[in-house]
Length: 295
Figure 1 (cartoon, rainbow, N blue to C red):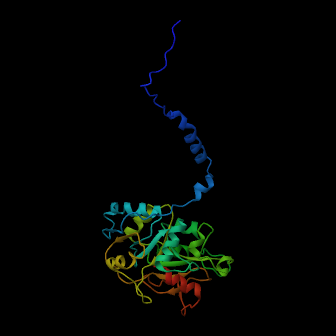
Figure 2 (figure 1 turned 90 degrees about the vertical axis):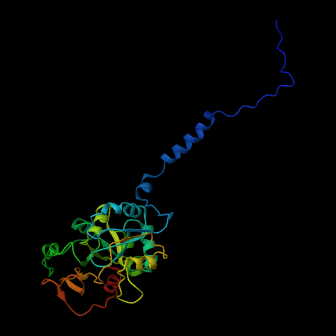
Figure 3 (figure 1 turned 180 degrees about the horizontal axis):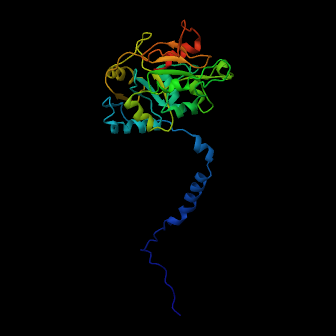
């Protein structure tokens, strides 16, 4: 019977490394843990925008002929960016209305208090029906049926104040104060802009955009030159600017639709129509807040 000789002393045993299979259970556990995350949390979470690049400025034809250039801007908005786009009146600072962190950044950039309401840029009348209680259609209690008349001036340079529905996120109508928190009726300014560039951006989004006019340091002073807007708000944290040329300093006409009749709060670019009522200037805080935030 042959005897096994020991390894020569000159030979060294090479230690064996753990096989790949030994790592498999750990990776499997990680995968299982990820799969067990709450689907509700995943569904309702919104992306928090992380600024990695420089300020983005895109020059476009006001007619919308080169709207393909807007693809980077649309992607930024969906990621939670805050930027400036043209409308059929003045330029507006915008963000996705359903992205909570984006709305907070917009308020911080524009220095708008959390208790103040914001306006929304809608894609169509369907958006208005979804995010508000809609236009008065007559109810036998003094409210006139003006829905057909309204349809004739939209899209157009008007901001209509309507009662918000539960679909509109709370941060759009103001929050953080007792009066807003417990108010049964919350109002919001809505717009459908008749601007090709603005509409091209909106149609690519999944929800309306929060909007607030780009104003200068003085009251009722609108910033209409995109170069100056970029120089002013870029350092404040703005992510992008869509340059559609210099605008005319004409804001929208604001019409309050929450009362018994359509009441003109401010006359602007949109002409006063026969079914609108012009009264003395309304000094209520809510109306003034909406005037300060809309476009």
